[in-house]
Amino acid sequence: MVILACGLIALCLAPSYTYGASVELSATPNLKSVDPGTAAVFTLTAQNSGTATDVVTLEVGTVPKNWTTLFSDDSIQVAAGASGTTSLTVKPSKDALAGDTNITVTALSTVTSTKATTSLKVRVEHIYKINLEVSNPGEIKAGESVNIPVFLRNDGNGPDHVTVSVIPTGATTSWAKLGTATYDLGVGESKIYGYTSSIPKDTETGSYIFMIKARSSGDGVQETKNVQADVQGTSGVGFSMDPLTMSIIAAIIFFVLIVAAILIVPSKAKAPGPEATTPKDLKRPKKVKKKKVVAKASDDHTKHLDRIEKRIEELHEKVERLHDSHKEVMGHFEDHMVKHHKKEVEPLPPPPKPTLPPPLPPSPAKGTEPGTLPEALHPEGPPENMSLGDAHGEIGHKTGPEPLKTATPKKDLKKCSKCGGDVETDWVKCPSCGAKL
Image 1 (cartoon, rainbow, N blue to C red):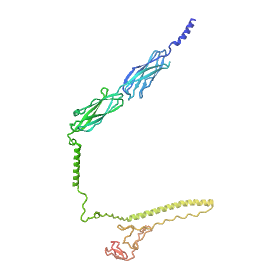
Image 2 (image 1 turned 90 degrees about the horizontal axis):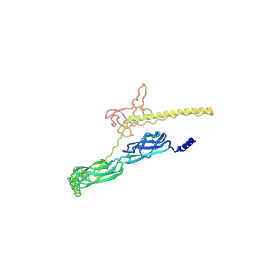
Image 3 (image 1 turned 180 degrees about the vertical axis):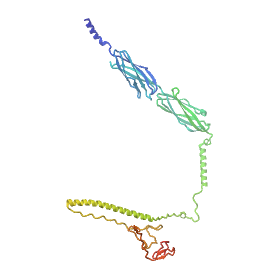
Image 4 (image 1 turned 45 degrees about the vertical axis):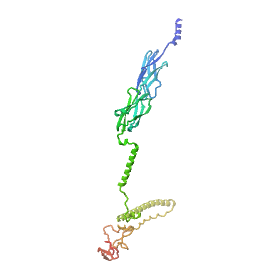
């Protein structure tokens, strides 16, 4: 009975004992400083205070935009009463702002579903950077003031306190001066400052160089730009005169130039002579352009006729081919009509033969009017000893072994009084020298 009672008491008290796993999480170190874009590595330790082996999974909370996190192992197996470690790499973005960022890491027990959290801090270092731009003033007159724009911009990752100053060099010590000018600029904020300097009247003509410096609140961070000023001193004659005197001198020079141009430059218009009394007489008669009459060569005339004949022959051959094809079709048609309809079809008439155009007149001789014949030709036609060609106007000739036969003259001949050549009695002009008979 005593043993049974002790067993019951043990069963009743069993739930009050701790059985399983209990997780604790810590990070080493808790704070790490890095530059933008540089990774920070932390060591995470998971402690199992329970009585059973546990598997712990790790998660990272929210981080800023464009930051990256990476576990070497996001799951750790931890025995009872032991601990396990892993590493976490945190990398800020390249444009991360200066300051501290807290990151939360959570450990989850897979045995008891209990959680443990720890916090670590990443400090982004403050990077100081100034953008300084200065424009050269160009030419400056002695005794006047000049305004030089100075452009400032904070290109760092945190707010900055910028001090602007002027550093004179050489002869600019007496006038290139500036008191302290300071500006508080946020990240990416810019400022345009107008630096005004008064040039003494006794400053000589020349180029002067001085410096403008912008110093950041960060140790040793500064930007310096050289400024070149071209000063026109009072030693120059043109700059020592007042505007009224310069205007008078310019007007006098302009008047002298006009008078000299009138006296020196000769007049282009010529005076009319005694015969030219009216403007109408001074006008020159217009030149009449003579039209040139170019006679075509006889070779061109012959070639033209040859091309016409060749074209007519080609057309005639084409008509014959069309007629043959038509004739073949009509043959099939006739056979069909006789075979199936017992009808005969009238035969196709032969193709008409092309008629050649009348012969063209011979090409005119050089120097004569177009379309007229030389006066030396016989009024009734060519000499009888020349035979006409075929219908195309060519000279008649025979092919083969027989030579060309010419007709013997039938009319009497007479001598030309000028050249002594033989001329037919009824000719008007001599064909050799062109003399009238």
